[in-house]
Image 1 (cartoon, rainbow over the protein chains, first blue to last red):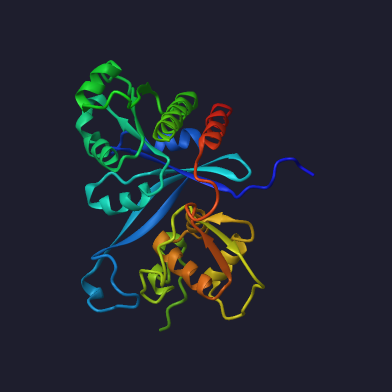
Image 2: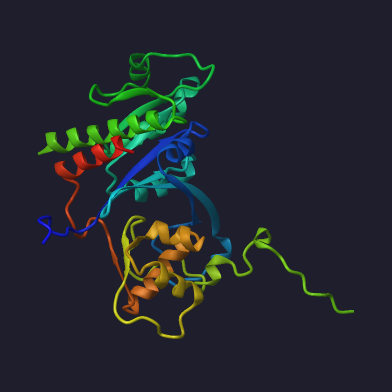
Length: 190
Length: 121
């Protein structure tokens, strides 16, 4: 018999956040098999009864495409990546996405640093472990990670690193940094 | 004069709107399934009155598969897939296990395994 008992499968969820066009899709694609996930959402009060068709004509559905990636660490241990939709009107989706998430990567572009403020605020408030990955675009001014940390007013323990999300090794480093950070958060809480 | 039938490829959009598949419902009867909840076929399959999409789900879920993966496989919005899954679950044809329900919570050993696995990619 195998000495390792068969275990229940473990599925982990990591979110990739940041402003529009900052490299979320590229990051997910650099490190995993990426596939578009369609969510057609009804923009209306939540929790209405099933089969409640009253007023259906006034409700708006909107299709949101999310980046969805899967990394199989081994059989029974899978990491799922979800690129969060950038627009604020999809905040309600973030609550569901971030529920039970292992952590989040916030991608920042130093030319438009304010774009990642909402993501940083969100994960700080929810207590979701996150790292800030500064995507070094061609031609963008290089800023030190300390500049970014000050500009974003980050807690000391939040890792900030420079990256090039197009490169797999760089994308790997970002993911490893996040999981190490989640691990520290987990062990310090115990 | 009668028009000849026109064949449209999928660029023309779905012939049946996704929410028509689930008769306009947008919510499942029970809890909302997590995107990474695991779907598995249980029991003897194949009542013959299933919708084609439900049959596809049963085929896809012979081995455990996540809710998000089902949506990608069927190329349907997650909201629609959740309702279809809820129906199948209510009929006792599948089980849907949320990651928080069973199994170990992410612990130190698992996270270290993930870190090593990511490094080895």
